[in-house]
Image (cartoon, rainbow, N blue to C red; front, side, top):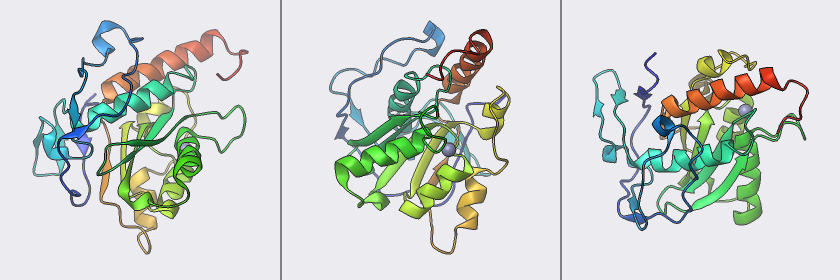
Length: 227
Ligand SMILES: [Zn+2]
């Protein structure tokens, strides 16, 4: 499985470098091989600059490598996901230029079927920022947005969306999925939505592990609450 492969669509946005990382590092709950790297206090982040990644882009538009810019924020989405070990869908919304975390959330589907991690993060964003400024944000999510969430992101005009595990990978852990990729939904919204970046596979090796662990938890404790 080439879970580390990344796919890009569209042009890169503005290059952002030297942005301070205004967040608390997630804790260490993974086995060592899945623990996040030591980012270091005061480390800087290129919030959404794919060129900061260490991988090499290939002619077919894919990129491989460990990277740094997107990884930093995906770790924050993973930290959110860990709040719901059985359904580890976490998301953060980051200011594309500032690198500031403007919204965050985890799947709370036990409360409402529409409260996927992305929607919870969007609601958090609205509470904190108001219903404005979406075009200058990047959403990071542990799982490829489902058609509902990708539609919501298109309606909001969130122009940069980065995910880790693919819909196919999530489905392989016995989580039902509507069979539409995020890119297909975005393409169907092309009359009003022009994303700058749709990128999958960031830290997928870690989130795939998270989803497999979640499957084991659901099998072992099928009657426990969703959280
Ligand atoms: Zn969703």
